[in-house]
Image (cartoon, rainbow over all chains, first blue to last red; front, side, top):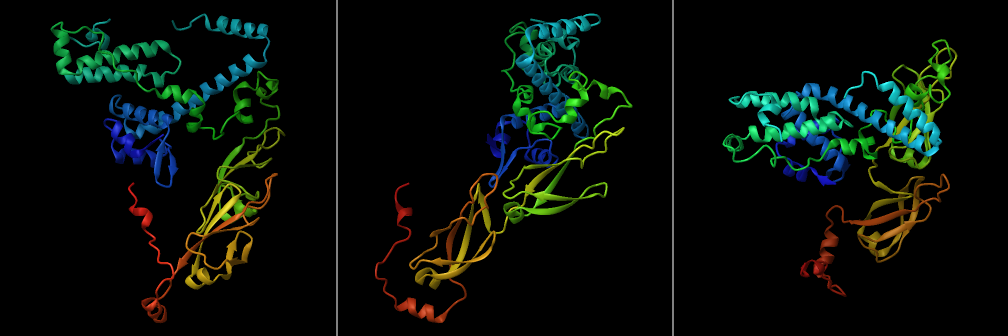
Length: 114
Length: 307
């Protein structure tokens, strides 16, 4: 949990105006406290990712909301897959899990990427 | 360790712009946060970053060209990865689905419905439940404390009477069954999910079941005591101020906080007095000029103590 001043000081290439704009567009959603914003670890990592995409990968700001939205959907899906796997591990008998694993590996074997 | 020129696919005499552009192209393709779960992409990205770290820095590039350093040992320190946070529970912060945890029925049915006994829904003629729709509703502070019914007009023109429960807090989600999207082929309608946000109040502050209030009182009310009118969530009540009160004196009105709800007992209202002198008063000034306090006090004594 760090404040906006600390985040800007510790992140090379990050300008206050940029960050405030990203917050107002809700690309980054820090906690709001009476004395200003507070950033959790995930917010800090997200700020760095946005900065890298913009400055190193040349993804322009107009394209960023599309990229972020797709990324958020991707991570939603991966969390759901993880939840599903955890649910199966918790309730499905071993032989069912084995069958599922076997079925999936059969299915992905032909034409799978190396 | 690979030759950085080979890794980036640039000739030995490539200029800075060619190197930058080659790196950008590869970084976009292999960035681990954009390729979660792909270990190969992560490896490639590390190699590409290491190559770029050498070739984008004229000094390091010179050393490498002269054979003073090799392609290894120049790797950057481990980078904080967005992916690690996004895939963990912390990632729900940026979830698109608007649910705090667990699975929405809609999401569940969308992909995995066919696995768990709802396979018939894939049949286009079969009844299908409508979508859940998410709305937000801002309510005033006292309505959230006391509970109230508030009218919400939906984008499609429908009007819903939303019952805000007693003691509602920011972020509470109300589910109105059957008020979401229409079902298909005779399926039930989805639900409307309404997230409450509570506006702050001019003078009440909430702390769980208790409320706090700073109440202005006159000098004579503080010194001599007496009944004063004080606002509570249930309306004005008479409160007795004990004589010899002061700014900062805190009084408790039992049971006058957030009313009992959901098995929680009613909270209390803490009233902190704030002495206000008001308009200039010649008589008061005359009195103070001649006044010799019985016990002289230094209200700033604590501030002079070494910190």
